[in-house]
Image 1 (tube, rainbow, N blue to C red):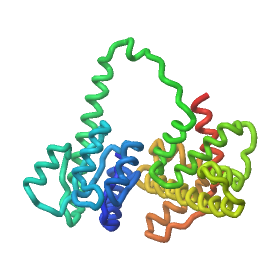
Image 2 (image 1 turned 135 degrees about the horizontal axis):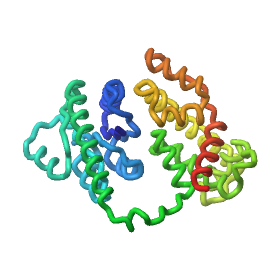
Image 3 (image 1 turned 90 degrees about the horizontal axis):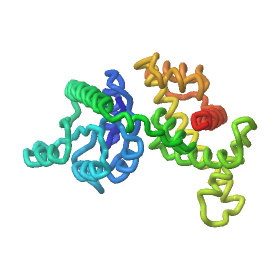
Image 4 (image 1 turned 90 degrees about the vertical axis):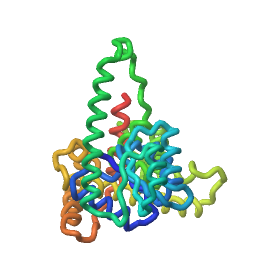
Length: 295
């Protein structure tokens, strides 16, 4: 199961993530500290379950869920609330909330609620499969639209749980540049050249060389943090299910597997998470892999 957490308290977000992943309930693929920032990311990555705080600045939990439903979001929603008010609880259920979790966070309650939601999710999935099997033959035989490179890259970043990271936008820009200037049979340009091209592309104005270098360094750091986040997600997934499809596919292809193993040990032993991030390998494999899936 893929979770997204929205809560203005960082400690609560961290606690929920630890409960979810330590109990083997799934993976947290994104988080936000307010409803306004969460909306776009949730619509883009479509998590299975959203855990959202009732009272938040900018956009409260009920208003956020109301906006989500307008986008036809089909995931389930759990409301986190410290307020015990029958009127507010009823209002939340009317807006599509599936369950409530009370603050302060209780590990037993969280696990119990999420396990029940997992059961509901699998039931809905089974019903959806049955409905799909009853569709007409003509519907089933309609040609599938050709996926673009951008869509393939977004799918991969989503699988790695980093589509909501700031650096993912830089990576997408980099892939679009490579699509128009390179093919999978020729070596990639230097990462420095790619950073500079992304920096130039992101600005409408004419940049000076010093501005380009400054922006390039910022882009490199954003991408490094994003790739590191993907490594952490995979390491956590490997600890939960070493034979999972995502772990078996991405860990040895996109990263130095020895670094993933080291990261798994660091997480398991609660040590500082510090490993080497091979940016060039990730970018090269991502481009080749995405290209191969649209050819």
